[in-house]
Length: 539
Image (cartoon, rainbow, N blue to C red):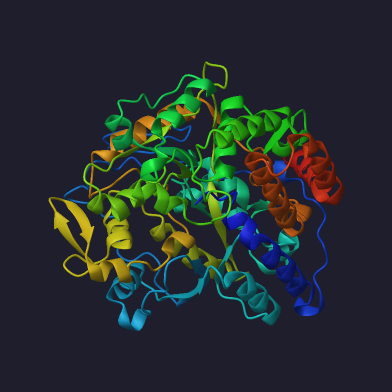
């Protein structure tokens, strides 16, 4: 799902507020730390892995490498043997799937431990419980060796300064070359780990391209429609041509992400816009008013699913079942849609649509978060930190290595079988390999879909087009206490107003008053905090 809408809004408030209280009570209270000069932090060297040649090469700007098949003879990631021999390593992290079987009953997990040379003791917390689990652990003082730090945790600078290791001596500049697979992580992913003038974690890399406006390519072909509209007027006609209410078929589902797509047409900011150190939020721009007016036109024309404004969490199903033809979602959904829906829909095909310019010409595309979260290491002696970093280096071994294949697909003959050289998960593997190493750290994402390699060139082509018009969020990797503690409530309220305007329940003329309320109740404080953080990060 889109990080801005679901994960951020649902979890931020409770996790932020409670974690802050827990930190205040930890060890008699943790004083706030002054805003550090982050401009002096030397970021890790970037040394891209070149051991396997991709069929579709990526770029430094963020296009992912694409692979049609897994190498038949994978590169041995650690020819010297297991890299992290030593005491067990405890990690607390989260999971979106059901919790997998424990290591004692999970052959995949046992094989992973053998490959590392240590026992990886994961405390796996369902995502719904993570907001309450984190503050309990922090307040109790018995920290694991490492912990997943989500953007929703408040008082983050103080928390990291008091309890977690500054990893600068291990990772800054050329020091990271001791961990070659961590050095392969793209530079932008490290931005979110910088606090207090140091590097306080390991990224969990995600694709720079962010979300995609998916379209049902089979429905486009069925009606001989062009999936690349030249402007908003053509997009609206395309939606009308896709709609067939008599057959319960519509063009659009989620009103909020449709507004995002319209903002991309208009060249609006990716949530924040920075100009000379001054920040402007997307909801206070002229572009949002234009986007709302355009979305109202689509709603009045009956181009949204009739339940779009009242039902949540059905948009994926509507898209997969063909009830809607367009759906804006995270790029990882590309493979997931095929896995979930292709078997029951002959000819099922999807592709990605790039936003055209509202009045013609090129539009823009919003980047996603470069790192889902980061893994912080509890303060410990230097050699212990080095052991944990070696284990994490192994968990970041890239595509084409034996370590990556084991981490993603488990043990051959048990967790996966081979189709040619490509691993396909067995029913056992689909359960056992959900051990959430991706929420510890990971290799940069790759474009690879062994069940249907023909999808890879489509994904790669979309990313190349998107990166040409990419708009980043200047606030990514920065910190605002107000955004953590107050932002979720404000955003939920603003989202409700957005939907009201699009649906026609709320007049567009009321938007200025809505924005004034947002500014008064926390928006201006967020802006000021981001501007101060921005200044602290400039050299």
